[in-house]
Amino acid sequence: MEFRKNSRIFVAGHKGLVGSAILRLLNNEGYTNILTADRQALDLREQSAVDHWFQVNKPEYVFLVAGTVGGIMANSTRPAEFLYDNIMIHANVIHASYLHSVKKLLYLGSSCIYPREAQQPIDESQLLQGPLEPTNEAYALAKISGIKMCSTYRAQYGCNFISAMPTNLYGPGDNFDLHSSHVLPALMRKFYDASHSGSQVVEVWGTGAPLREFLHVDDLAEACVYLMNHYDDADHINVGTGTEVSIAELAELIRLVVSPGTEIRFDRTKPDGTPRKLLNVAKIQDLGWNHKISLEVGIEMTYKWFLSQIGHGLELRGHRNV
Ligand SMILES: NC(=O)c1ccc[n+]([C@@H]2O[C@H](COP(=O)([O-])OP(=O)(O)OC[C@H]3O[C@@H](n4cnc5c(N)ncnc54)[C@H](OP(=O)(O)O)[C@@H]3O)[C@@H](O)[C@H]2O)c1
Image (cartoon, rainbow, N blue to C red; front, side):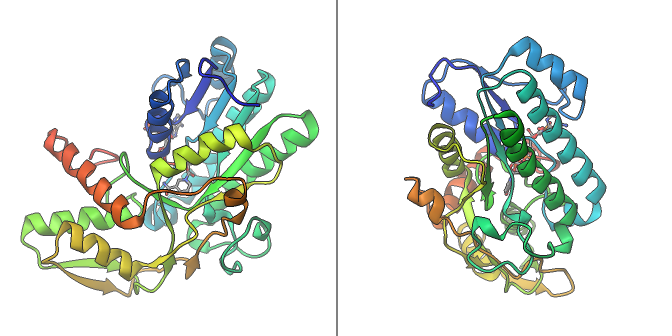
């Protein structure tokens, strides 16, 4: 079932990294009936408010991409928030989608749902096959319950709710706040700060050895719309590039683009997180979707966007202020 250009499509979390990319794509592709509600208008943790909003706005399709999201530091210091917020958001939105007969919902999980020692590259069957990475266990548990909500609502009520597990994302709209950002925007911000403060050194958390995969958010947005149109299974599906770099290699790529004169120093007292995290993306590739933006090009695009935001006079502080 393909959604039409005039279908009522709710992008939950439209101001975030992912939500804003989906909104951009839908607008560019001529979708005319896109519904949004920011946190002030609708706190998705509030069940009755969410139910009322669905009753009034009657969305036919839902991209559920809202959530409390962050890097290792935020996950380790605010686990209760990560668990509570994310469970409440998906419980309310998925249940309201069922009650109000949404035709299809796409829920976004994360590659953090897989066990710390998952076999690499990680295919979808690895879910719940071992202990989780302790530094993001609360977030992962919340996300796993979201996947299970989609599959149980499908099994019990016949809802066409699907879930996709993206790898690490980056791109325009990312969070560059050093207290809550993910590794790629955090490094970009650190190198930018170093180049503007005359500092010769950037500290990188951990040993630099962990291997990670990065997907540009515009590629993810394409994948989400593709899945909305072409995927109707109960099982979740991975979304990534299928390629990986070490944190040291990533830091070097960003250093070259942002501040070639700065030296990298690894702070080995800080945690590394999962040693390796590469998704097996054979399933989505077999379905006909592939990423387009290389990491090198994506970093340059993101840095251009970052600079353009500074050019608009926004402060380099706070959540998504750049
Ligand atoms: N970023 C990644 O690397 C990554 C990787 C894998 C999966 N994901 C998944 O992708 C989804 C989106 O992530 P993101 O990176 O786009 O996060 P983000 O940039 O932090 O955006 C999250 C969005 O959710 C909204 N939101 C949060 N709590 C809300 C609430 N209580 N009520 C209403 N809106 C609320 C935020 O609103 P405000 O603007 O008001 O804060 C924001 O628009 C999440 O489910 C995440 O698990 C992200």
